[in-house]
Image (cartoon, rainbow over all chains, first blue to last red; front, top):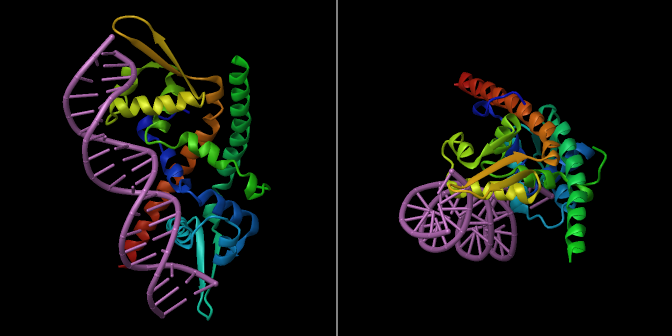
Length: 117
Length: 117
DNA sequence: CCGGATCCACTGGGATACTG
DNA sequence: CAGTATCCCAGTGGATCCGG
């Protein structure tokens, strides 16, 4: 961490990942390669079509994922991670690992607070 | 990335880092160890007292940073990274590195778009 | 099947003024 | 010096309906 704050690019990476459904989307696509819109939607309980579309568009805009439309009836649209997007994988892994520890950390903290009483 | 989405903890880490001034705060404290509120504020152009206070409180709540109040007049409050908070450093590093590449990537993309015309 | 268009609630961030 | 208290605005996320 020998960078001066003026040239901090952390936010750039953060901006890509921030969005209620983006981490989940990436996880699905990283694990399963290519998925149709409807499959993606089905595997993400609670998401609306509008939101899923929006988040996918934003990831596509940053070249993290790729969108392929098959001009047929009924429509078919497939999404997949780009090579470039795959470079985010180590970061997601690291965050997942840290998050897991943090969850344990918070539980421990709660237990200690209860003991105080 | 062999985790199923149901046990995705990426958001937990993300939630800690998200906040307009949090990455910068962490960067400053990681680099310079301990800083007073006013020093921190001075090194972050544009931040208001309210926002700086708020972001610091949130980081403190998660045990990422430590707040020490010296009961004197005028008041003196020092902030520093906790041992636990320091475990975020690799993630911040990785994001900074990725962000730097991404900035270059976007510039390249723009140039290509201009060439199209 | 996919996604655009509208309308709406909520909250994150900010400007400003005030206090021990 | 450090922090609260108010008021405000814009953006995000969501519910719902419509269309190719």
